[in-house]
Length: 268
Image 1 (cartoon, one colour):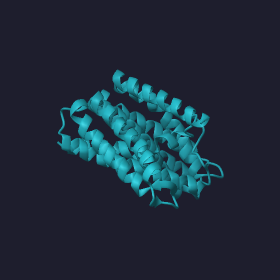
Image 2 (image 1 turned 90 degrees about the vertical axis):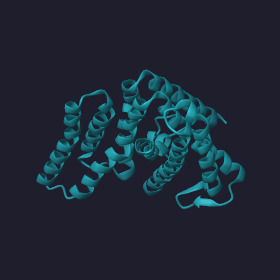
Image 3 (image 1 turned 120 degrees about the vertical axis):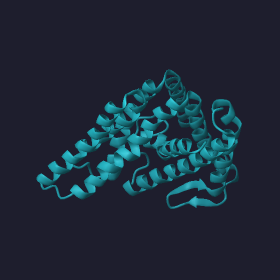
Image 4 (image 1 turned 180 degrees about the vertical axis):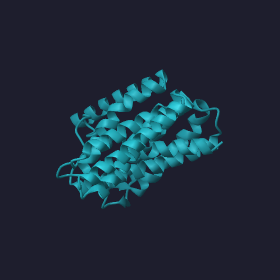
């Protein structure tokens, strides 16, 4: 019970901060999630290297931070500055590869893949939250509501009706019934609140976006569970009381945010 209360209080604090930051604007939202990008990148490195991070681990963190700045601040700056920011992580990546090869670092190939994967997996999704705020505060709020509804709905429906395991080798607690229940609830929230919070878009757009958020969020949860199992750990970190690490708390968001952003860009 004590752990549940701690988890609920931590979640409530995050909800309040996320909504207040979104109301304040893109820059405040960007600043709010900056520590999450740093800590999430470090957690990912520990999951990928359970025996200790490699000698060029700082390059991964630098790339994540620079990419987060480039993407997250894009709505606030001009085209010339944006081009410069986008080029910066690319130049840094090429420099790191050159230094690694010159030093004879035999793990340059796998390390290069990590330099690419970490910024795309951790930094880019958080940066896109500022873009959702730029679309409108209602869009950002609705995205968060859909994400939270999926998590809560899948858990409650799974506990009440779950009989068939979804992927027991990856996440024993998840059920097919929970997945279906979470998707249905998210689509219901999208159909109900979409016209209220995002009247500039059609109800069908919000329902499709809700479906994408629910499925991508579930996949993100399963992906992080698989990485933890491979690393032999229960949690990715311990910075959030009752939740574990940044990746534990935001695993669904990391795939759901790019999905929502892309759908809202292409759908009417």
